[in-house]
Image (cartoon, rainbow, N blue to C red):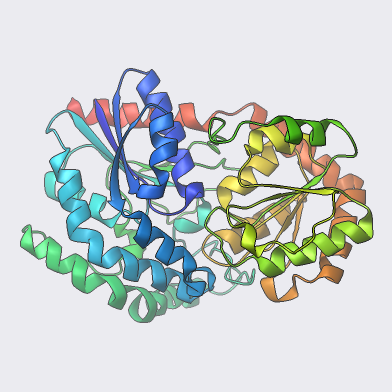
Length: 418
């Protein structure tokens, strides 16, 4: 079987698909990954075929836009970027599709994949990386900055989603999407996030049920897997200096604002000040060193990239933006976590981790040296946080999200072929 994987977004969105692709290839399948050009290296290092759908210039232009991390304007920025490329992405996917031998595996924002699924009616699946991307009127995903409205009456929450779609979502993408659908003989759709983004055949959540329990209004085709817990060990092996830093001295606090975040100056400045006050060492991970404070002390080491699975088990705590891939690696390593959620799934992930007892979170406007110092001190000194983190680590040790996801994909492929 040929699997066409279409992740959309940053490294945190792409890594899980690459991990699944590697496992599918090991099972004897052909795998092609369609994504932004900067992800070509990680895909090809993993032995998978790669097709660029977004140029490096387009990708970097998006990451430079400060609105990308705005709690409201972020999704607008992404949808405006997706709309012009819908037609070309659809044509690219179509050119690699072999009837009767191909399965589509899409990201929730992979609208071209969903259009093509509706057109050809073949085996397909949608993979959700976090609970917040599957809309519900029961447990509503936390809104920035971590506001939970799930306690409101059901009718009011349904009305809230109607308003979000009518004002904030559909006008940005529906005209282009429905124009392309009409050209292919497909009926128009509306309220695309109210179900249409999900494959009609298989929907997989790459998170355990204890992190994101199934909701009554989730698709019937939904199945839980677990966190994929795959990063790119070949991208930047632990070098001698990093190994020595980890081996000698107290365990460092690891900090990462996300692979696509180019606006983390305040994030790193606050953390540096907190580490100095607490007498703690740090490991800062960023691909954009220009956002780091000048004259960092010798107690803080910087790396462009490091495998979370290699460094987090040797850390004292983990500070990050709340992306699901990053957070799940912290859970698997049994680390206390301090989260600065900005947009997308991040506020909801932060709230869920806090409810598990392993994390504290601070909104960007409150992410100051004083508050980071206090929160980090509490996380490092709390026996209950350490116990909760160990519990999560043990629970994840018993699960394999990638293999479970591959099982579900193969089952759907065989069911559709029957």
